[in-house]
Length: 242
Image 1 (tube, helix red, strand yellow):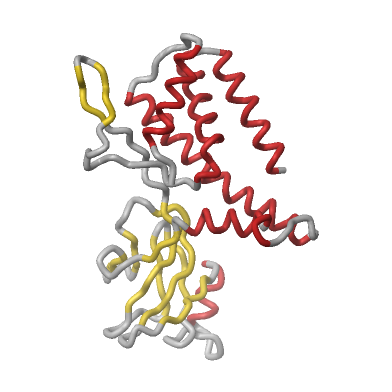
Image 2 (cartoon, rainbow, N blue to C red):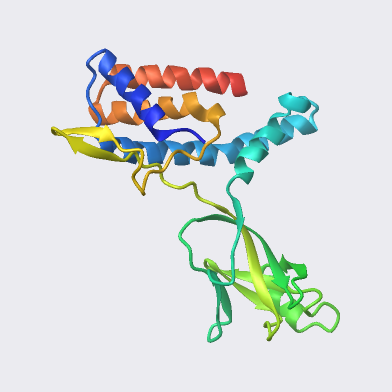
């Protein structure tokens, strides 16, 4: 995890160093959210890229196992639904997650009264009727299937008493929030605020995070020099990762 105050101090120092403007707390928090989400989404592209290199024997092991390191960064956001936030709509026969932090759905599981879990297989909509009407591959509680309906899930067979469903998913990072109090008209960091939220990225993303925030700041301030410095640093990081 990366401290939000530490990042803001560096960003403000770099902006003020050459009198290149000031970023309000609102602007900093807004650009920080964008930067964190951009880095988070890029982890998946990096992971795919390095897996391809691994298949070509172009990656190493131990601490230099880059695919493993990236996967561990992504796994921080792995979570499961609970009986309170993954609910069933009987009228439409749909299971839905009530939270707003779902980024990417993973495995869907059938859970019986003893807590035993069985993976539910996703089936294309064009194949659903074939399964349901078949004597050979009809869905059962031993071999259940589901189809995706918008952001919800329809499970076959329809679950009865004693069964529930559980969704494994990757959540979105929590929005960073630099909290403060006003002292003589100036914002002063408030570390005890209940809504304080640090960045949820791995410390290895510290420099790219600052550069991306600076890039957004430069666009907002229309400072070409800020944008150029941020772009140059991002290119250096990208070259090291390629």
